[in-house]
Image (cartoon, rainbow, N blue to C red):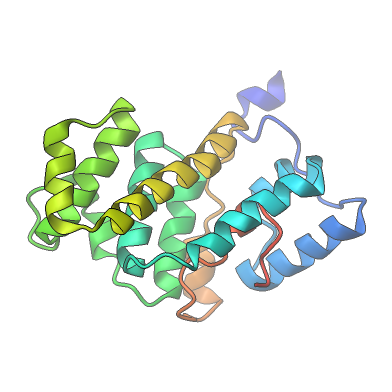
Length: 210
């Protein structure tokens, strides 16, 4: 009970995994992210390999999205903020920094409806994402505004991003996983690669080297 009251993860991080697969995951995660992130040590290390492969599949499918990378990351960041997943908020900014994306829009999301940084298309997408995440439903008016700016394929991609981000956020919230300060690591460590968030699945999955 004392450990739970201290604010750390509800389950102790596994620092030294037993299986060769998880040892490889730890090595690759450290190589790519600069450390073995807490979700891997708390969640992935306790689950059968198939569950990690599922998260890695999300990561690989993200590479097929046609939406601009900046918008993809903004959507994931907004879902993380609304669900108050501190780890996810941190890692989405980390991906933006690695991809050499200006983080000004990430910092201004509280005011996206009025801030001139955002286009009308971005506002429509963020209205849709916010409503879907907060209310678990979307009004016809919100969907109509979204449809003015995005194709049917793009709308489905937005839904994909919202849905899969919930996989990450709820897993971390459920185990009381907080920020790993990856943005601080980025400032002093890994250089921008332009790869965007292709290592998003590293937080739960095994495809960190893809």
